Every structure is written in C-alpha cells, then in structure tokens.
Length: 251
Image (cartoon, rainbow, N blue to C red; front, top):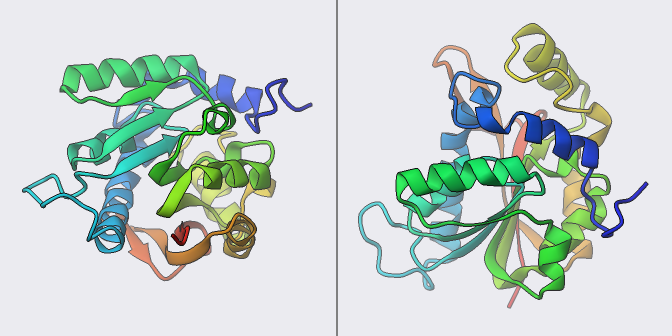
C-alpha cells in the first residue's frame, strides 16, 4: 500500500533507520561503513561540481570550494554527507522522513557550529512546494524507496536548469548479492542484517533510462570498491556493486 501522502517512502524502512538514528555519528557503530565510504563520495562530488559549476561558483577560498551552490540531500540520515558538503561552503537543505534522524542531525550540526536546513519531510512534499536546487543528491536512498522511478522523477523536478541530480546506489548483479548482502551484512558484519533487499537494487542502465525520462542526461559515473590492502574505499571502473552516477538538466 502506498502512503497516503502519495510519497515513495517505505514506512518499514523509515522505522528501521529511525531505530538506528542515535548511532549515526558513532564511526564504529552500525553506520561505520558510511563513515568509511564518505570520503569517496565527497571527493567525487567535489571534483564533479567544481568542474560543472566552475563559472557559477564563488571565488574559491581555502576549504570552501563549493561556496555558492545550493544542494538538497534527500535521505540525509544523521547528516554525515550534509555536514561534509556544508564545510566545503555549499548551502545545504537536508531532508529525511525519519524524525529521530533529523533530531540527531540537527543536534550534531549545532554542536559543530554548522548551519544546515534540516527538515523532516519527503521529496514529494518538498517538490510540491516548488523548491529547486543546483544539485539534488539521492545517495544510498533509491534502493530503500517503494517506487524508484517515481522517486527519481520527483527528485529530478527539483533540479534547476544546468543543475545536476546525483545518485549513489547498488547494482543488481550476482556480485552485489554476494558482496553487499552476504558479505557485508552476514559475514563481515559491516551493515546490520536486513539493510538491503537485492531485488530493490538498480542497474546503471535503469538509472540512465529514468534520467532520460525526466529530461536529464548522464554526465559522470564511477564505481566504488573496497581496497583490502589499504583498508579503505576508492573509486573504480568496476560498477558491479557500488556506484555513483550524475545527470544534468540542460539550461
């Protein structure tokens, strides 16, 4: 059954993440994989935005390379990515349907002296208000919603002309089942069991088709893999498991 507000939010997923909310900022807790993954996300996004919005960005100052950009972070959780981008100078609006997530995110940002507009709402509700941004992020979100196509169409509506929609998700391959579910959840314990459902994973081809239907076209992509020798995540040509993909709305 679809929620009454017409959103693509899955109430069971929201409840599960809400129960974990107080652990968001524990780098050794259930969210430790996101903490380890975050530098790769920030590096990819910083490089991508720096090149794409070069003319629109404010005069760069040390550490504030994204000053002048407005960014919407959908499904922000406790704010791990939002805070990193805010520190780079971007103006952040960050939303999540789980109220405890937003409470935790607001508290942590306040303690860090960061100004982020955290809202407990859905992408659909925000889109109905006519909001739009230079960048819309859906990072590790699309595999947790009820209707991925509808969610992406809604997210795309909030992208300004010459703006970008960036999605990070998991590819639906046998390799991803082995690594992201059996390995990460049941063998290594990197994620709580039940975090992912393989049938909800999305292929790059499916994402590209959804972008095209929404009037966007792909301008960048990268895979993300774990390097066991360095003990860290890094970008890769291998998109069989984790990957990020960016699409632009032409002005």
